[in-house]
Length: 496
Image (cartoon, rainbow, N blue to C red; front, side):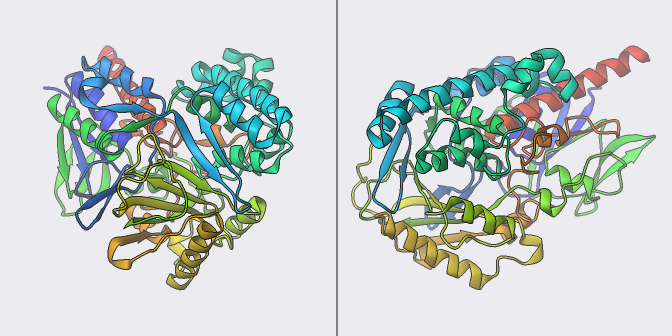
């Protein structure tokens, strides 16, 4: 009889693990407390409209191509991806605007027109440095199951390790390439891709620039479509998915994980369990006292949360693209407030216009599907921010958008507001943190748990584990969990 595996959570990592294990003939059951797959790759229902309310950028296409190919499928047969020529539009209250492009030369030319030839040369040097960092870490860190400093030195070499700039903050490294504070602000925003501050995160995160330069795609049907496709592929390969099925605790017997007890009291026995929730849920005993040896994430080590508005409205006054960022006047003050557990007085605002594809032409003057996001502290389990603080932040957000040229009207009837408290409920043991632990300090990445735990038969996947947050990284974590489980099963079989 095939080994049975229970996967807790139908997020990207859990679904990828289910796909790969089902393809190997294991009996896979995915249990998901929500009514649909996706986890953070979620949708908000605003009337009849469906709005992506989680990740909105698709990168590292090769990750999913490899996963589909591993089970005899083709990504292109299941998902339609449209390459983006313009990565994002960026705007400031002084009226300045800058588009970044998938083509590096085109971005350099735009930066030259925006800030001068010296800054364009600085961008070229920055882009080359980002590419070197990616090449160093791709094989020696990102694809490793549980990397260590010594292992990284052994594979990449001490010289290359210094070259990834782990001991310099992202902000300081950017100052080596750009004199214009707007450009340091723009590229410093890459730290927020893992819920962190550019003033505390290592310069290693500039590799995000290289990832985006390798391609950004728009998913036909929205990003949530990826979750639907992954779930369907898992089921086609024989995995079973149960929705509305919350797990109460993970069981253990004979010194190893032995299954789960559901919130309704039903017991499901298994030979192995993969937990695709936040690793802090295991670390803090949310699933029982397991002795799994997973490091906890105390509140100061949490990544950022967010305050979002998923809405249907008619934007006016500004030529939005699919991805537009409206920057605050004082980036450091913004992150100082977040570090103190406060919403920023003047926030940077990200707007995803989901009815726009490759142009800035408004669809027809009809209401558009927008997701607006500002960074927030992960203080949801402390009851912050309050409703009054959220309302004040909404006013400040709309004011900042107007200062940059965009006028929005938020109608409570056609808008869903989500903050740290709700995110904390959706993703337990996080306080609303959306990226697991933050990336502050040179050793932060090495502190993330890997796929294996100290409890045999219990594995971890998801954005709070190695190799980190983001849709493709979560997929890689699922692949690593599946590989670790299969290797352990093979080792057990050999020892019998």
